[in-house]
Image 1 (cartoon, rainbow, N blue to C red):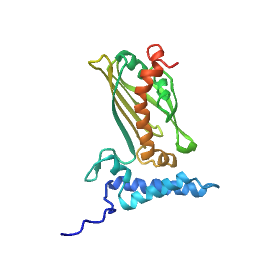
Image 2: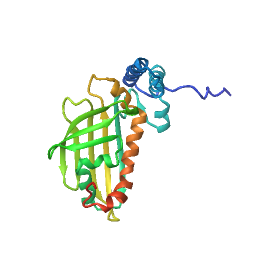
Image 3: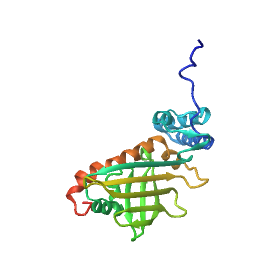
Image 4: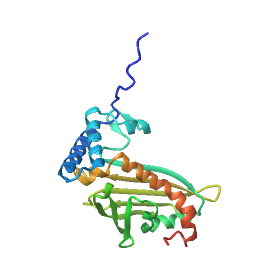
Length: 233
């Protein structure tokens, strides 16, 4: 009986596009670290890990999360973070919809967002903190679909420094609660890989957004429950 291959053999589980992006992002982070007077350990480790991913084609985090790659096609494209979640909350559908529809409420539970300001009925201004307090990214978004109590979606405007998409669906549950289907995506604009983007579109940021999305249930069922029609207070 032949011996089992070494357990630490690295399996290629990311596509060519993501390996290229990892190489570019890793190089940018290491270059940014070299320019600073003090050593930023997080940037250094992040840059080194991204270069490792590029060379090996292996992502330990992706493997742990069970993300599958079919050939060179991935569930999320290179340079993109896409979050999907389904939550059931013990609040009426009209209230849950009203809370999401007021975009200024989002930073109350999405801590990766510094603020969202509604400029008009359809346009809003967003500000997102970069990891490590190294800056921020700002963009405008427009509502692309709004069916009261059923579906609400937005997309960043053309020319924004980051592409951001959100789609939220609402439906009743037998227990008089609300099922909320959430899809939120961040991606870099075509051909743009800036230092800020390299720090942002990482597995660590993905985990943070996932945590923020899951926090919505706790917030709407507890803290927001004392408000009026789901509005911030």
